[in-house]
Length: 113
Length: 114
Image (cartoon, rainbow over all chains, first blue to last red; front, top):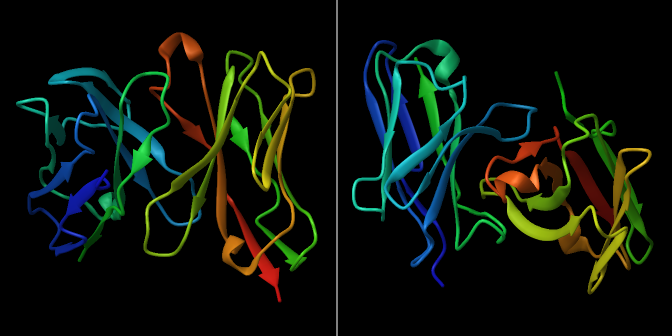
């Protein structure tokens, strides 16, 4: 299996701009997850998909955040009107089934100027 | 509210000795636990898991112990090797939700001294 792929690895943007991240899960993994990790903390759950259906969203996911997985393959996470507090590592993970471990990508580091 | 706690931010162990990383949880609904290892600039890598129907699970040099009454789990690495130097996260979840929403601790940085 090739691993979970995330693009870009780093994103620097000005406050107020919109950003979009992409995640390509491991082939045939029907579950896809987004987490956010800030300095000194563990990853925090944001949302997850089973195929193209978004099944749960954390309260951390404000109205400025939207995630999609249109064809049940890759996923995008968009942040509108970015704020300083959005600076973090955004991690994507996938799993084959609900009883299988989640495998993580290397993340997209977002820095807000 | 930190539902999963790793109270030791760092740990140093000599190569060849046993490394013991600890984790406590407060959510009594958690019944499935995982350990991940993270190197700098990489995503977390799954190591080992344990269900609450067991109190021990082994995989090579890695063993996880679960004490449900104390809401405590530990990861033992024997023998420790230099490549084990990394940050280790424990995570818990409710199996009613399968393995969906993982709640992570803040991590323990393990340094293996050659």
